[in-house]
Image (cartoon, rainbow, N blue to C red; front, side, top):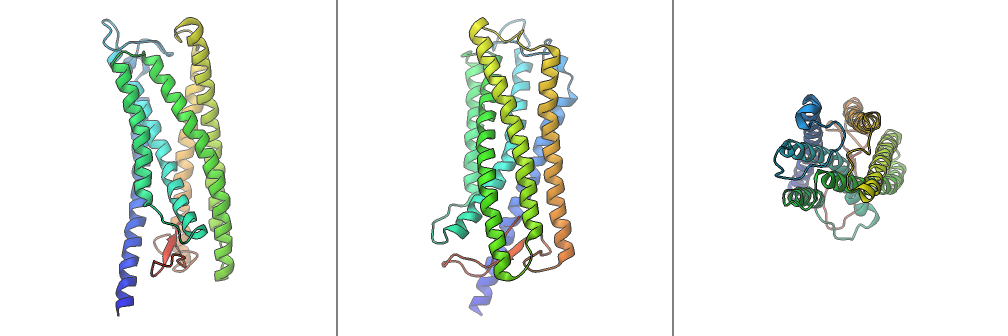
Length: 295
């Protein structure tokens, strides 16, 4: 009786964790889409009379510094929400892999880890905005800080996705052999996430790194970046940057939706359950019942 109650309690806790992850995933996609939509729907002339980047200092009379500042903050928050989607995935992948590769190791709560990482990125955004408002540097400086931050995060994400993906496929194949069931669908899904994620982050890292280097060189030589980008160059940068974001959001939604669709068709069990998660044996000695390996 006590084992049954313990099992029910464990199942409910896992169900709550799964709901939290899925809710956070969809909420981040919604936030990213909303922030980007607001920026796209407002004409560029509203934010600034200049189409390409132009230096504006905070509290300068005669300059639309407030709207330019708001635009940069809006863009930064949109990028933060977008990158948080993959940070969420990577944090939970890391937790699952640690569970199976190091069963006796102490694990922190993945959602807490995720919130701490996002808090660090948010703190960088707040510090960037504060330094601008304190007139430590112009709007060019804000753009440069955002580019460097996103470039570094992109490079880290490319490395982490590649490493975790390889380990995750190893775990899935091992569990499939032990349970004598096919994990080909889950492996293919991991490969899709890896390929699409790496293409996006490699593209973003290349764009932001190139953008930051050009800004730094030109800023060092002339003290401004007002004339460094032509309309055509700036159009290419904006289109490549935001079309890649749209593509990755659409692909992530498609991958998640296909997972739920296939899970409903498979019924209960290791390959798929009605909530879209795959049950696997727990390897922690201190845990009871089953855990879930979500892909």
